[in-house]
Image (tube, rainbow, N blue to C red; front, side):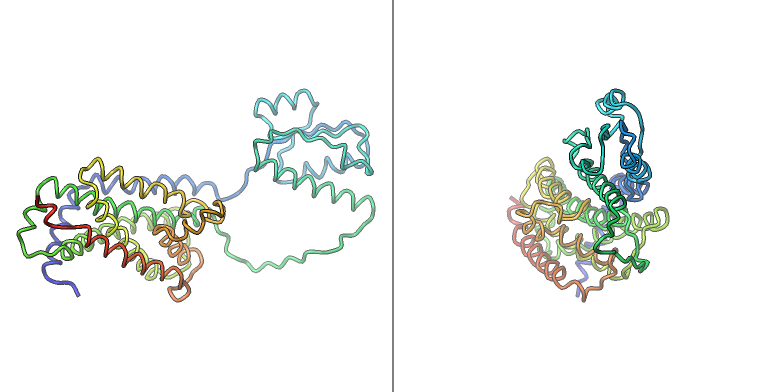
Length: 362
């Protein structure tokens, strides 16, 4: 499958890559910081600090106050309106609920006051939903009305997915892209600057041999770096991988091959180290936020979702997340496999077409 010259060149490039120990170490620093920070969150929502002013002596006000105080979503502080309003302005409270003197059953919907900064959209939605449920419970209790439907809960002991479990496949995919593009695109520019490509031009080496040899060498480096990060996540952060490790590493190899070839394209287009960093940033930075690394693509605007789904990093993230979080096999990911194969073909063709020896030699 691979020729002797390709293996020989791969061995030479591997030795060159391993000499740059500083780059290898710092490439591991980024994912460790992110995973270490998110591992302490546990995915739980912190309670909102809200103030409660009860100016009523009615049974409705009493029941409502008890329900709000017992809600785990809220950390309730009772007091007068002046002090709690001041705390809201100073940021000590997320909201202030004011129960008026005439707070009765027939006037619940109009008399309860809620003081809150409407720029805090997430807090506003959560607080209003919880208040609505509390008021509905009180009304049913006092009117003696049974709910029309009862929700029967059945515990199937499903796996709870922490945010760090969701985050890991995305971070690994981003590492693959970053390490691969840096390992091929930046090296092409460096070899051009040092005159290595000019000397290789007079040898029988073909462009495909040169590309395949760097891909093989850099692929081994990427696998080692990814393995270190993955081991840290599994043994120190207790991240669970549901799928097969073999499938996960095959996806790592396929994703690395795509981005290594794309790195060749960038290195062939850019002529200096400064320009290849700029072009590389234009390719990698938007995909970091658009490809579902930190949050689901469904939360993005619908108008750009079709474009996001065809990005190379999106395809790799979906594949790795399907294996790690959902336990899927390659047979279960037809669309992802189509995207992987398509990008493999596109990236390799572009890499071989854009990389021309004669232009390098001039």
